[in-house]
Image (tube, rainbow over all chains, first blue to last red; front, side, top):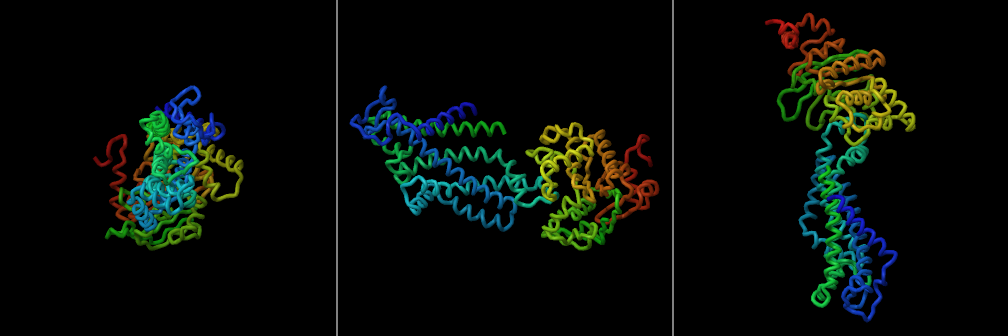
Length: 258
Length: 262
């Protein structure tokens, strides 16, 4: 299961990286061959502007994956910091930060992301990254807090303290490696949520804007052509599904290993 | 060397004192046993020495002096300097007191990294030396092992190595053999006795096992309900127990002939 996930994900990564260097056609080149079905010239056909869909998917995959990776990295980093401090110290630090966390969680994820994007200014992939990573912090913080709190009373932590280890050393040298069994699955789930959220935001038109390609934006474009060019919506949709599916399999697999 | 004077500890939610005014001293190079049943206050006494009392949740008074340093009233940063350097602690269950994801050698070396300015190579040298001191076979291999790859006895030896690597003046042993099987217990006890003779480390052994205490200790203090009811040289306490509670404890040691007074 894990192996299949790794294969799918690696293929996706190769496609995305290749797309940043080379695509069969320019992803912005408009031509008169509009809405053509798959052929030897255009493997996945062309869209309503005559652009090669495969080229656009390769570019879009890159955009979407960059957004998702950055989002998860920032969200996990800050979430881990919050979780470590609250879980390890407890007391009033814990109460204040976690109530704030609860307040943020109370907003529907998507609405909150919409709000932040419109505050930061829509249109760029970096505003999407900022919005989504802020929205993702509470989830990571909560998972990590539980783990830190339960590990903190183990004897090896007391031993470390008795050796004279300081709090920062205990939190990151002793406890952090021991949280990996929950952090790694959380990262894969977070990545998938970020992919879907980016697609959702772009679908609504406040994510990445043209001429940059992103899977979500392409999905919203293709939706109106679902009857006249079904290959368009299918190829974009399947790419999103495969990306999420592959990473999901890795996450499930590593949970089963642990 | 270690001097406990009139130590009182009471937890806030309880009406009875967990430790009700005990005094005890340990001389240089001595092994003192602190025995008593569960709830007698021996672990709370040890926690006070190690600086592990949850200070906000209890009231305490008295003095605990280790080579002139006040352990009971020291703040956290002072304690951190004393920990490891002056006191080494060995816990009951070695599999829980080792970080499962850190290699043994690194764990033993941690205390050196925190308290000394030694280079990585010097630290490794010291760690290996201390591993040989506790009779760990193949120290080089054990150095790069994870805790789950070692047996309980080996792991407890490694934990003892971690406690002595920086040459503390006091070793606090909290039931160090309870989680081990009988053969390993005997080996660990003779190891501790060797270390005491070779390195001159003083030890405070906390145990409910009279047999273990008798084997190792030069002096014994018997605790009951937060008080020391009897204290004296090991042989005196065993051969001529004064307090009825001590007599009961000694009668509870199984012998080859069955119980003594039956």
